Image 1 (cartoon, each protein chain N blue to C red):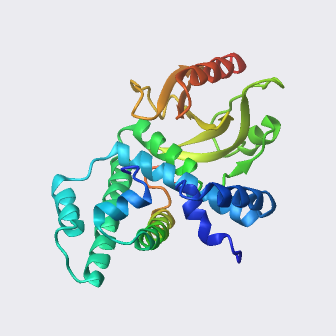
Image 2 (image 1 turned 120 degrees about the horizontal axis):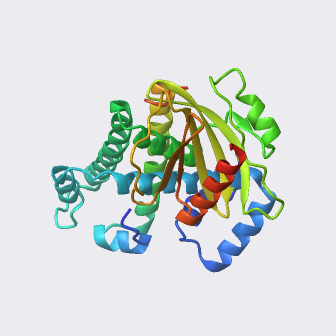
Image 3 (image 1 turned 120 degrees about the vertical axis):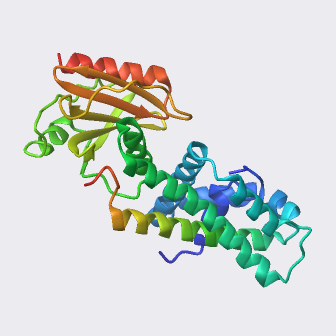
Length: 244
Length: 49
């Protein structure tokens, strides 16, 4: 992407643009797919890091070390301070990220694995395996890839939900489907596994996430989303009706 | 994560605001590269594709 506005993307995402410049930037976004896509990516990345930050706490020693290095009282040569700060930030982010991956690797907790998968999907770092708003495209895509079948609900024209696509996922060494829906500005992951492979676990909302789980006709369903609990309930009802 | 404005960060750390911007841009780039490489190497751990 070679665009004069490129350097403004970070400022825009952080809400640091002057109002007049922001107006011009927004106008530019309408005609520049490259910048629009970068803005979206930066926003999703920021959201994912914020969520990871809420789920894990850095050890107090790391905090103390970072604070010591960036303390204004310790006036060290600028180059040292700059590299110290960058290293400290990276250690902090690396601690979050490795805690995130390590926790999913330990793996007995299916819900934690599914929440991680939802965060990865939100971060938009992988394209979806199947991208379609049409359930008649998404459902057949899973045929032959899963040892079970399911029915995505038929969505009415005025439904608040939109099907975005799906991913083939694994949890506890078992294959399953992730259906991705949008409701207003939020995304919802619906995970479906065979109940023989993935057992029911008690679910509770975790920080920013709403989690909803149930079993029906030999399948284990989990909904993970940052949307309101009522939205998860509505989507669950639609899924239950479609799979009676 | 602390939800501070650039100006607040600059004042807290006693550094110019331009330095705040350049460090944030660099950190963003490195975090993105870290996550992409972690996902690339391990795919998604526990949720293998």
